[in-house]
Length: 377
Image (cartoon, rainbow, N blue to C red; front, top):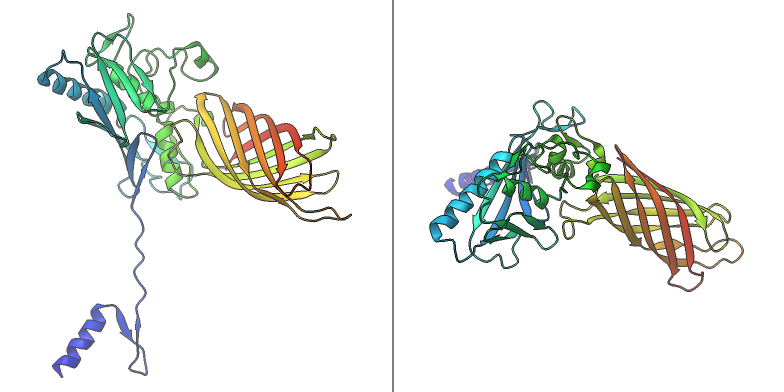
Protein backbone atom coordinates (compact mmCIF):
# COMPACT_ATOMS: atom_id res chain seq x y z
CA UNK A 1 0.00 0.00 0.00
CA UNK A 2 2.80 2.37 0.94
CA UNK A 3 4.60 1.61 -2.33
CA UNK A 4 1.45 2.44 -4.30
CA UNK A 5 1.08 5.75 -2.49
CA UNK A 6 4.74 6.53 -3.13
CA UNK A 7 4.31 5.84 -6.85
CA UNK A 8 1.22 8.06 -6.93
CA UNK A 9 3.16 10.83 -5.20
CA UNK A 10 6.05 10.51 -7.65
CA UNK A 11 3.68 10.81 -10.57
CA UNK A 12 2.12 13.94 -9.12
CA UNK A 13 5.50 15.52 -8.44
CA UNK A 14 6.73 14.77 -11.96
CA UNK A 15 3.74 16.57 -13.49
CA UNK A 16 1.38 13.73 -14.32
CA UNK A 17 -2.39 13.94 -14.01
CA UNK A 18 -4.91 11.17 -13.84
CA UNK A 19 -7.40 11.30 -16.70
CA UNK A 20 -11.11 11.01 -15.81
CA UNK A 21 -12.58 7.54 -16.19
CA UNK A 22 -9.38 5.53 -16.19
CA UNK A 23 -6.03 4.74 -14.58
CA UNK A 24 -3.99 6.30 -17.37
CA UNK A 25 -1.80 9.29 -16.74
CA UNK A 26 -0.70 12.07 -19.08
CA UNK A 27 1.99 14.68 -18.49
CA UNK A 28 0.75 18.16 -17.61
CA UNK A 29 1.79 20.91 -20.04
CA UNK A 30 4.89 22.78 -18.86
CA UNK A 31 4.51 26.28 -17.52
CA UNK A 32 5.36 29.02 -19.99
CA UNK A 33 8.16 31.16 -18.63
CA UNK A 34 8.73 34.45 -20.44
CA UNK A 35 12.36 35.23 -21.09
CA UNK A 36 13.42 38.18 -18.96
CA UNK A 37 17.17 38.49 -19.66
CA UNK A 38 18.68 38.68 -23.13
CA UNK A 39 22.44 38.10 -23.41
CA UNK A 40 24.53 38.94 -26.43
CA UNK A 41 27.72 40.38 -27.84
CA UNK A 42 28.75 43.11 -30.22
CA UNK A 43 32.13 43.63 -31.88
CA UNK A 44 34.07 44.42 -28.71
CA UNK A 45 31.84 43.79 -25.71
CA UNK A 46 28.89 41.91 -24.26
CA UNK A 47 25.54 42.96 -22.82
CA UNK A 48 22.57 41.81 -20.77
CA UNK A 49 19.14 43.30 -21.41
CA UNK A 50 16.64 42.68 -18.61
CA UNK A 51 13.19 43.35 -20.07
CA UNK A 52 11.59 43.27 -16.60
CA UNK A 53 14.00 45.51 -14.70
CA UNK A 54 14.37 47.55 -17.93
CA UNK A 55 18.16 47.80 -17.77
CA UNK A 56 20.81 47.27 -20.41
CA UNK A 57 24.20 46.45 -18.88
CA UNK A 58 27.00 46.87 -21.39
CA UNK A 59 30.43 45.42 -20.55
CA UNK A 60 33.83 45.86 -22.18
CA UNK A 61 37.13 44.26 -21.21
CA UNK A 62 40.33 46.26 -21.71
CA UNK A 63 43.74 44.56 -21.62
CA UNK A 64 46.48 47.07 -20.81
CA UNK A 65 50.10 47.28 -21.93
CA UNK A 66 51.96 49.89 -19.88
CA UNK A 67 55.37 51.49 -20.50
CA UNK A 68 58.23 50.42 -18.24
CA UNK A 69 58.30 53.92 -16.73
CA UNK A 70 54.99 53.28 -14.91
CA UNK A 71 55.19 51.25 -11.68
CA UNK A 72 52.46 48.96 -10.35
CA UNK A 73 50.79 51.66 -8.23
CA UNK A 74 50.69 54.08 -11.18
CA UNK A 75 49.22 51.40 -13.42
CA UNK A 76 46.46 50.61 -10.92
CA UNK A 77 45.67 54.30 -10.50
CA UNK A 78 45.52 54.75 -14.28
CA UNK A 79 43.12 51.82 -14.74
CA UNK A 80 40.91 53.07 -11.91
CA UNK A 81 40.74 56.48 -13.59
CA UNK A 82 39.86 54.86 -16.92
CA UNK A 83 37.01 52.96 -15.29
CA UNK A 84 35.74 56.11 -13.58
CA UNK A 85 35.85 58.09 -16.82
CA UNK A 86 34.06 55.52 -18.99
CA UNK A 87 31.45 54.42 -16.47
CA UNK A 88 30.74 57.96 -15.26
CA UNK A 89 30.55 59.65 -18.66
CA UNK A 90 28.56 56.94 -20.48
CA UNK A 91 26.16 55.40 -17.91
CA UNK A 92 22.47 56.38 -17.52
CA UNK A 93 22.54 59.46 -19.72
CA UNK A 94 19.42 58.81 -21.82
CA UNK A 95 16.53 56.36 -21.65
CA UNK A 96 15.89 53.96 -24.51
CA UNK A 97 12.21 54.01 -25.42
CA UNK A 98 10.20 51.76 -27.75
CA UNK A 99 8.12 53.20 -30.56
CA UNK A 100 5.14 51.03 -29.54
CA UNK A 101 3.32 50.91 -26.23
CA UNK A 102 3.05 47.13 -26.60
CA UNK A 103 6.83 46.68 -26.23
CA UNK A 104 8.80 45.99 -23.07
CA UNK A 105 9.74 48.97 -20.88
CA UNK A 106 7.38 51.37 -22.67
CA UNK A 107 6.40 53.09 -19.42
CA UNK A 108 9.74 54.26 -18.08
CA UNK A 109 12.24 53.30 -20.77
CA UNK A 110 15.48 51.33 -20.52
CA UNK A 111 18.43 52.51 -18.41
CA UNK A 112 21.93 51.93 -19.81
CA UNK A 113 24.70 50.95 -17.40
CA UNK A 114 28.22 50.91 -18.90
CA UNK A 115 30.89 48.89 -17.12
CA UNK A 116 34.56 48.85 -18.06
CA UNK A 117 36.63 45.90 -16.81
CA UNK A 118 40.42 46.26 -16.60
CA UNK A 119 43.05 43.54 -17.08
CA UNK A 120 46.82 43.43 -17.26
CA UNK A 121 47.16 39.92 -18.75
CA UNK A 122 47.31 39.38 -22.54
CA UNK A 123 43.99 39.38 -24.37
CA UNK A 124 44.94 36.30 -26.43
CA UNK A 125 42.09 36.63 -28.90
CA UNK A 126 39.37 37.18 -26.33
CA UNK A 127 36.62 39.72 -26.92
CA UNK A 128 37.63 43.18 -25.79
CA UNK A 129 40.36 45.71 -26.63
CA UNK A 130 44.13 45.83 -26.30
CA UNK A 131 45.03 49.17 -24.70
CA UNK A 132 48.52 50.47 -25.36
CA UNK A 133 49.51 53.25 -22.95
CA UNK A 134 52.39 55.30 -24.35
CA UNK A 135 54.72 57.65 -22.52
CA UNK A 136 53.91 61.34 -23.13
CA UNK A 137 51.26 60.57 -25.73
CA UNK A 138 49.15 63.64 -26.49
CA UNK A 139 46.34 62.09 -28.53
CA UNK A 140 44.44 58.84 -28.49
CA UNK A 141 43.61 56.49 -31.31
CA UNK A 142 41.18 53.56 -31.63
CA UNK A 143 41.48 50.92 -34.33
CA UNK A 144 38.11 49.26 -34.12
CA UNK A 145 38.62 46.48 -36.72
CA UNK A 146 41.62 45.01 -34.84
CA UNK A 147 40.31 46.12 -31.41
CA UNK A 148 43.20 48.24 -30.16
CA UNK A 149 43.20 51.55 -28.27
CA UNK A 150 46.26 53.79 -27.95
CA UNK A 151 46.35 56.23 -25.01
CA UNK A 152 48.85 58.62 -23.46
CA UNK A 153 50.09 58.04 -19.92
CA UNK A 154 48.57 61.40 -18.93
CA UNK A 155 45.04 60.61 -20.16
CA UNK A 156 43.96 59.51 -16.71
CA UNK A 157 43.34 63.23 -16.11
CA UNK A 158 41.16 65.48 -18.33
CA UNK A 159 42.91 66.96 -21.37
CA UNK A 160 42.93 70.74 -21.68
CA UNK A 161 41.73 71.64 -25.16
CA UNK A 162 41.75 75.40 -24.62
CA UNK A 163 38.10 76.37 -24.47
CA UNK A 164 37.09 72.96 -23.11
CA UNK A 165 38.49 69.95 -21.28
CA UNK A 166 37.78 66.34 -22.14
CA UNK A 167 38.13 62.96 -20.47
CA UNK A 168 40.03 61.46 -23.35
CA UNK A 169 39.67 57.82 -22.32
CA UNK A 170 35.88 58.22 -22.35
CA UNK A 171 36.19 59.75 -25.83
CA UNK A 172 38.11 56.74 -27.12
CA UNK A 173 35.51 54.44 -25.62
CA UNK A 174 32.97 56.08 -27.94
CA UNK A 175 35.06 54.92 -30.89
CA UNK A 176 34.89 51.33 -29.63
CA UNK A 177 31.12 51.57 -30.20
CA UNK A 178 31.66 52.60 -33.81
CA UNK A 179 31.01 56.32 -33.30
CA UNK A 180 33.16 58.60 -35.45
CA UNK A 181 34.83 61.89 -34.51
CA UNK A 182 32.60 64.94 -34.76
CA UNK A 183 35.34 67.57 -34.95
CA UNK A 184 36.60 66.55 -38.40
CA UNK A 185 35.37 68.27 -41.55
CA UNK A 186 33.59 65.15 -42.80
CA UNK A 187 31.25 65.31 -39.78
CA UNK A 188 29.65 68.44 -41.22
CA UNK A 189 27.52 66.11 -43.38
CA UNK A 190 25.96 64.57 -40.28
CA UNK A 191 25.30 65.56 -36.67
CA UNK A 192 27.54 67.10 -34.02
CA UNK A 193 30.04 69.09 -36.08
CA UNK A 194 29.29 72.32 -34.20
CA UNK A 195 28.56 70.64 -30.85
CA UNK A 196 31.92 71.38 -29.18
CA UNK A 197 30.87 70.09 -25.75
CA UNK A 198 30.02 66.65 -27.18
CA UNK A 199 32.11 63.70 -25.97
CA UNK A 200 32.94 62.89 -29.59
CA UNK A 201 33.99 66.49 -30.26
CA UNK A 202 35.86 68.36 -27.52
CA UNK A 203 33.84 67.91 -24.34
CA UNK A 204 32.26 65.30 -22.08
CA UNK A 205 28.56 65.45 -22.95
CA UNK A 206 26.96 62.23 -24.20
CA UNK A 207 24.09 63.08 -26.54
CA UNK A 208 21.10 60.90 -27.48
CA UNK A 209 22.72 60.20 -30.86
CA UNK A 210 25.64 58.57 -29.06
CA UNK A 211 23.24 56.06 -27.49
CA UNK A 212 21.99 54.77 -30.84
CA UNK A 213 24.26 51.72 -30.68
CA UNK A 214 22.68 50.67 -27.38
CA UNK A 215 19.19 51.18 -28.83
CA UNK A 216 20.13 49.01 -31.82
CA UNK A 217 21.20 46.18 -29.48
CA UNK A 218 17.81 46.18 -27.74
CA UNK A 219 15.83 46.54 -30.98
CA UNK A 220 17.39 43.36 -32.32
CA UNK A 221 16.61 41.46 -29.11
CA UNK A 222 12.89 42.31 -28.91
CA UNK A 223 11.09 41.03 -31.98
CA UNK A 224 8.94 43.63 -33.71
CA UNK A 225 10.00 46.51 -31.44
CA UNK A 226 12.12 49.51 -32.36
CA UNK A 227 13.88 51.42 -29.59
CA UNK A 228 15.40 54.89 -29.80
CA UNK A 229 17.33 57.14 -27.41
CA UNK A 230 15.13 59.65 -25.62
CA UNK A 231 15.81 63.19 -26.80
CA UNK A 232 16.89 64.69 -30.10
CA UNK A 233 18.49 62.15 -32.39
CA UNK A 234 18.07 60.98 -35.98
CA UNK A 235 17.00 57.67 -37.46
CA UNK A 236 19.70 58.24 -40.04
CA UNK A 237 22.07 56.87 -37.40
CA UNK A 238 20.06 53.68 -36.88
CA UNK A 239 21.38 50.26 -37.85
CA UNK A 240 17.90 48.91 -38.79
CA UNK A 241 16.85 45.40 -37.88
CA UNK A 242 14.79 44.79 -41.05
CA UNK A 243 14.70 46.60 -44.38
CA UNK A 244 12.64 46.44 -47.56
CA UNK A 245 14.46 47.57 -50.67
CA UNK A 246 13.38 48.13 -54.25
CA UNK A 247 15.67 48.82 -57.20
CA UNK A 248 14.45 49.95 -60.60
CA UNK A 249 16.99 49.93 -63.38
CA UNK A 250 18.15 48.77 -66.77
CA UNK A 251 20.16 45.87 -68.09
CA UNK A 252 23.23 47.21 -69.86
CA UNK A 253 23.25 44.30 -72.30
CA UNK A 254 20.00 45.23 -74.05
CA UNK A 255 18.41 48.13 -72.11
CA UNK A 256 15.52 46.17 -70.61
CA UNK A 257 13.71 47.51 -67.54
CA UNK A 258 14.00 45.43 -64.35
CA UNK A 259 12.49 45.64 -60.87
CA UNK A 260 14.42 44.12 -57.98
CA UNK A 261 12.65 43.60 -54.63
CA UNK A 262 14.72 42.70 -51.59
CA UNK A 263 13.79 41.98 -47.97
CA UNK A 264 16.56 41.43 -45.42
CA UNK A 265 17.19 41.28 -41.70
CA UNK A 266 20.21 41.98 -39.52
CA UNK A 267 22.01 38.84 -38.32
CA UNK A 268 22.69 39.44 -34.64
CA UNK A 269 24.47 42.41 -33.11
CA UNK A 270 28.08 41.58 -33.96
CA UNK A 271 29.46 43.47 -36.95
CA UNK A 272 32.32 42.01 -38.95
CA UNK A 273 35.46 43.98 -37.98
CA UNK A 274 33.11 46.37 -36.21
CA UNK A 275 32.21 47.95 -39.55
CA UNK A 276 30.15 45.61 -41.73
CA UNK A 277 26.71 44.46 -40.56
CA UNK A 278 25.77 41.01 -41.94
CA UNK A 279 22.21 40.71 -43.21
CA UNK A 280 20.28 37.78 -44.70
CA UNK A 281 17.12 37.88 -46.74
CA UNK A 282 15.17 37.08 -49.87
CA UNK A 283 15.22 38.67 -53.33
CA UNK A 284 12.93 38.61 -56.34
CA UNK A 285 14.04 40.15 -59.65
CA UNK A 286 11.71 40.62 -62.61
CA UNK A 287 12.52 41.64 -66.17
CA UNK A 288 9.41 43.57 -67.26
CA UNK A 289 10.27 43.24 -70.95
CA UNK A 290 10.45 39.44 -71.02
CA UNK A 291 8.51 38.47 -67.90
CA UNK A 292 11.48 36.53 -66.56
CA UNK A 293 11.38 36.21 -62.77
CA UNK A 294 14.18 34.92 -60.56
CA UNK A 295 14.17 34.55 -56.80
CA UNK A 296 16.20 33.18 -53.92
CA UNK A 297 18.13 33.85 -50.69
CA UNK A 298 20.63 36.68 -50.29
CA UNK A 299 23.48 37.68 -47.99
CA UNK A 300 24.57 41.31 -47.58
CA UNK A 301 27.12 43.38 -45.72
CA UNK A 302 26.11 46.93 -44.78
CA UNK A 303 28.95 49.37 -44.15
CA UNK A 304 26.79 52.07 -42.61
CA UNK A 305 29.10 53.45 -39.91
CA UNK A 306 32.02 54.71 -41.96
CA UNK A 307 30.87 58.29 -42.42
CA UNK A 308 27.24 59.15 -41.74
CA UNK A 309 25.05 59.72 -43.64
CA UNK A 310 26.83 57.83 -46.43
CA UNK A 311 26.69 54.05 -46.62
CA UNK A 312 27.89 51.18 -48.80
CA UNK A 313 26.06 47.85 -49.18
CA UNK A 314 27.57 44.81 -50.87
CA UNK A 315 25.84 41.50 -51.35
CA UNK A 316 25.46 38.18 -53.09
CA UNK A 317 23.03 35.26 -53.08
CA UNK A 318 21.54 32.52 -55.24
CA UNK A 319 18.69 33.37 -57.65
CA UNK A 320 16.76 30.71 -59.56
CA UNK A 321 15.05 31.48 -62.88
CA UNK A 322 12.78 28.56 -63.91
CA UNK A 323 12.15 27.47 -67.47
CA UNK A 324 9.92 29.79 -69.43
CA UNK A 325 7.94 30.12 -72.66
CA UNK A 326 9.70 29.72 -75.92
CA UNK A 327 11.92 26.91 -74.59
CA UNK A 328 13.84 29.35 -72.42
CA UNK A 329 16.12 27.21 -70.24
CA UNK A 330 16.32 27.58 -66.48
CA UNK A 331 19.22 29.48 -64.96
CA UNK A 332 20.84 29.55 -61.52
CA UNK A 333 22.31 32.99 -60.97
CA UNK A 334 24.84 34.28 -58.44
CA UNK A 335 24.43 38.05 -58.08
CA UNK A 336 27.18 40.44 -57.03
CA UNK A 337 25.75 43.79 -56.04
CA UNK A 338 27.01 47.08 -54.61
CA UNK A 339 25.00 50.12 -53.55
CA UNK A 340 26.41 53.52 -52.59
CA UNK A 341 24.05 56.10 -51.13
CA UNK A 342 22.89 58.16 -48.19
CA UNK A 343 20.62 57.51 -45.20
CA UNK A 344 17.91 59.77 -43.86
CA UNK A 345 15.28 59.28 -41.19
CA UNK A 346 14.08 55.73 -41.70
CA UNK A 347 15.05 55.27 -45.33
CA UNK A 348 18.02 55.36 -47.68
CA UNK A 349 18.60 55.79 -51.38
CA UNK A 350 21.54 55.17 -53.65
CA UNK A 351 22.96 53.92 -56.94
CA UNK A 352 23.07 50.14 -57.39
CA UNK A 353 25.11 47.90 -59.66
CA UNK A 354 24.35 44.18 -59.92
CA UNK A 355 26.12 41.57 -62.01
CA UNK A 356 24.54 38.14 -62.60
CA UNK A 357 26.50 34.97 -63.37
CA UNK A 358 24.50 31.94 -64.53
CA UNK A 359 26.06 28.82 -63.00
CA UNK A 360 24.25 26.64 -65.57
CA UNK A 361 25.73 28.64 -68.47
CA UNK A 362 22.31 29.07 -70.08
CA UNK A 363 22.32 32.88 -69.87
CA UNK A 364 25.00 35.50 -70.56
CA UNK A 365 26.62 37.60 -67.85
CA UNK A 366 24.14 40.38 -67.12
CA UNK A 367 24.88 43.91 -65.89
CA UNK A 368 22.16 45.85 -64.06
CA UNK A 369 22.32 49.52 -63.01
CA UNK A 370 19.55 51.29 -61.16
CA UNK A 371 18.25 53.51 -58.37
CA UNK A 372 17.80 51.80 -55.01
CA UNK A 373 15.37 52.80 -52.23
CA UNK A 374 15.37 51.05 -48.83
CA UNK A 375 12.80 51.54 -46.08
CA UNK A 376 13.29 50.52 -42.44
CA UNK A 377 10.62 48.14 -41.17
